[in-house]
Image (cartoon, rainbow, N blue to C red; front, side, top):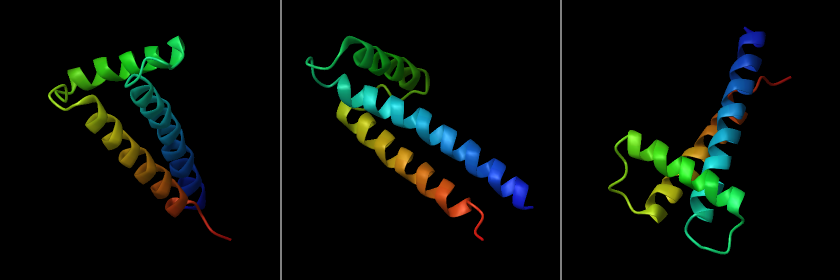
Length: 84
């Protein structure tokens, strides 16, 4: 059971890191002063959200939603982590 909890923690943390990169890209695409590679990640996020049917939301609303989802995933990973 403890190994399963560790596996779930690692998977949730990996998803949280991926979502963090997408969130950073979404916020970077709001302005033009961000580096090109970071705005490219924002373009990837925009394409993914369009496939999910979320293109009707504003860019800021999508970025804010991603930030909330990322923090929830990180919190869940910390909650599931086995204790001593």
